[in-house]
Amino acid sequence: MKIVIVGGVAAGPKVAARVMRINPEAEVTVVEKGEFLSYAGCGLPYYVSGVVKEQAELMSTPVGVVRDSVFFQKVKNFEVLNAVEATDIDLKNRKVGIKGLGDGAASAVLDYDKLVLCTGSKPVIPPLPGIELDGVHKLYGVEDAEAIKEKLAGQKALDVVIVGGGLIGVEVTEALVESGCRVTIVEMQSQIMTMLDPEMAKQVELHMESKGVKVLTGTRLQSIQGEDGKVSGVTTDKGEFKAEMVIMSVGVRPNVDLAKAAGLSIGVTGGILVDNQMRTSDPDVYAAGDCVEMTHIVTGKPCYVPLGSTANKQGRVAANNICGRKDTWPGVLGSTVCKVFDFCVSATGLSESRAKAEGYETETVIVPGPDKPHFMPGAKPLILKLIADKKTRKLLGAQAVGMGDGDKRINVAVMALTCRMSVDDLAQVDLCYAPPYSPAMDNILTAANVLRNKLDGLIKGIRAEEVKAWQNRGDEFTFLDVRSPAEFEEVSIPGTKLIPLGKLRTALDEIPRDKPVAAFCKISLRGYEAALILNAAGYKDVYVMDGGVAVWPYEKKTL
Image (cartoon, rainbow, N blue to C red; front, side, top):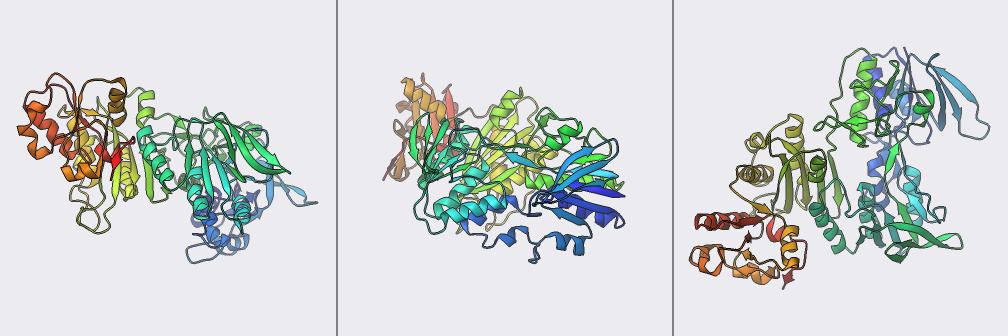
């Protein structure tokens, strides 16, 4: 069986290696337009920062062997043609036209029994004035990382503008700051990191600003300025900013030119349409990775979530089916994690805004807390958000932000979503416990139980932004802080009334009964206790502010 694979970075090598393990007699040829093969694209920001010391580490096996064409031929027994472009596909006669990219390189035709398209994605580069200037970069491939590193070499305190506040833009920010750069992020959306809901993204934004990064949301880039052919600044709808380097990170789109020209079906998201066996509209052609349209596990609807982890898993499914071992791809949840300075930022499933857009009636919680018992050295703060469907109590999504171990809590949520668990099921999951690793009631279990309380009507939550709106409108309500006086002296929110929880029962006459009450503490655990006391005393309009002081993103008085 002759198998031709177009694309040699993530999904392509996975397909080839898996096919050769199952069917050693197969003839497999991988065609890759670039010079570099099977490299870890998600590691590029860490190569720029110097965490990854050598370029070769991004394309090496765990024991340090570089995955080049010789390696694949000698070890995996398939041929790789790099620096060779696939130019056209003849579906009827099952042929792929190829052409070398060097000067005077010849064209050729490859016959196939099965063809696999792993053509990936391509970066979106808006047609802005000045986009061609020296100093404008993207961070999509190894060559891009090398160009940025060369610009940084020997330079001090460069002014850098990153256009786009998504994953790549945010991840490369840390690398640039550590290199001594002054960094400004320009994001046209109202928040960075749209995988998160706004209040969670705000926490990331505040953390980045604490590291010296200027974050401009709701800001549109209009042009890039230059002097003598080099970048000198940018013009936005909010003003002009100095820049000696501009990094474009406004997203990617599926690379489907080859598939579209051949007549293969394209999905509504712009990716190649495939079934759950990774087969395209032609039964002899498969596709995997960033070039394909995917299905969201929660909604069952088409989506596009380009991730290296997904590409590798899809490549294995495609290879199994090519070799006659039936396998199916279940879809994606969009599970994502990234490092933002000291923060672990992670999410899976639907955000609250996306869930509402899909027609769900949602209930949510925001629950801060240490990722280990407070008495353990190394305990770090973590903020969790869970989203559920009010009608079915099914979990819809989860988000984690903070210095603590958010990824392992989100991975628990991934399993819950994959198994279609309810919030009640999640709250009873038998997670392991020891003080060096987690609280006795792990953060995600606590969050699930708070969410159950909300679903059961035992607690009414209110968000920080809703309370702030009350303040801005001049609404009459009691903003009740039930922390200790020492905590209040250390940090407090303007406009609050301090009544420590232990004194609340004897101080009820200080709280009007005919006005709303928004109770809170450091993380709102005591705020919940205060709400129970007030409800038992006959108060009718009592709320607990989600997350307490820990997630209040506005002005605070601090010592």
